[in-house]
Amino acid sequence: MIEAELTRCVASFYPGASGATGAAKLSGGASQETWSFDVVHPDGHVGAILRRAPQGYGASPSRAAGLDAEAALMQLAYEAGVPSPRVMHVLRPEDGLGKGFIMARVEGETIARRILRDEQFAQARPMLARQLGKVAAGIHGLPASKLPPLRQMSSTKEIADLEREYRSFDWPRPVFELALRWLGEHDPGPSDETTLVHGDFRHGNLIVGPDGLRAVLDWELAHLGDPMEDLGWVCVNSWRFGEIDKPVGGFGSREELFAGYEEAGRKADPDRVQFWEVMGTLRWGVMCCGMMQRFRSGPDHSMERAMIGRRSSETEIDLLGLLAPRA
Amino acid sequence: MQDEPTPIELTTAVADFLRNDITPVISGHHAFKLRVAINMLDLVTRQLTFAQGSDTAEAARLTQLLGIKGSLMELNRALADKIGKGEVDLQTPGLSEHLWQTTMDKLAVDQPNYSSYKREAARDER
Image 1 (spheres, each protein chain N blue to C red):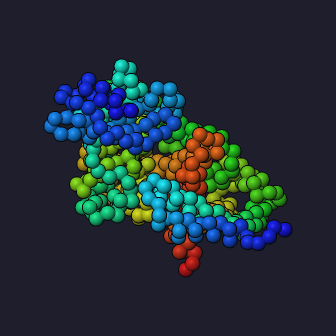
Image 2: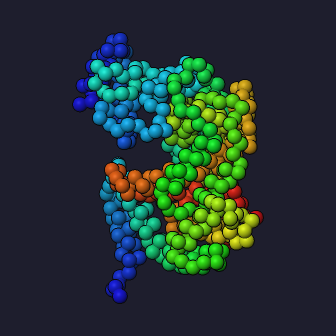
Image 3: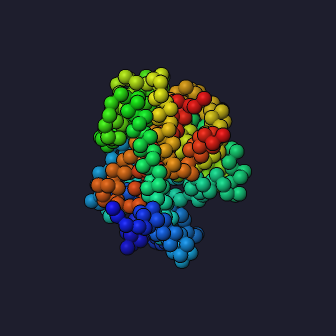
């Protein structure tokens, strides 16, 4: 039934398109859905993705940039040569599809275990860390004057947000307390430069092909802040999927990441990156606890959410490894 | 006193049934959900197997560290509070060892296949 609305919508903005077919829901959260479909065209089908908040859905979480901002950022990134899907259409009320946008579908893999293990990515893996550095530099270099309105973050504010969220769970975690204490004592303060920060630059949001990185997705957590945050987040052990000695996504070294970043004309600050890696590890731990809360209070009473709640201990061992390594 | 079979024997039997008899006849999204379900039962079995011993040892360490008695929850609240206030830190004798041991015991139940845990556990064995 969504195909009927998509057919009408597609005909209104895509010259020559006669319909939409093969609609399949890829994911659906409390506030957003992602659909894959094909635009039917005499020259052949064109792969497309719909990202939307249907009418009547709950407001997006307070950290979310909003779908309009996501579309603007993706288009800006695309135009600047950052690998990103082209935005084809921003939804209007008369489309009857809710709020959101339609973008070109980029073929490739997002599942970390396949990217890290499958033979077809063997050539891509050794170049990914450097590529990610270059792409991060491209994101951080997007012109501030063209950015949509975004929340402004700082390390100090992020520590306070994490502490507030952790306290709201009312469940004692001595290792998280240790991490919060360390973060407070090592807070580097505002960065020299405030830039666009992707906010979720890691496996799952990167489309990889045999030729390397093809697109950066999911700008939902984009904000303004310290650019080193993105470089620290991509080094969090939770995104290494067992390739523990390759800190960048399980495929590369920090040195390669920084080299790619610097080749693109920006300077990496390894101390700040390390700080953000600790913050990111704690952040993922707090997010896991949040999953447990949502499992318990509903509406998502799923086994997956319950089990993610039991993954917060993974971040505790990683925090200890970072802050109190054993001799 | 409850009768036999024990909870561990019961959860193991269900997990074995799902793993051996149901997994081969199921595919797609339900196969994924089934794997999650089996992992969950295995976790419960590990907790039933290990938690009593590790909880007792954890409470003993906390009593030693803090010099107070109480339930495991009360002791953990007290430790969390003291760390948060900076009254104990990594210089405090025994704190680092306690946090490591407690965390290793959690992972032995939650995710014994997690990379960082496997590496640290292998070091403990040497």
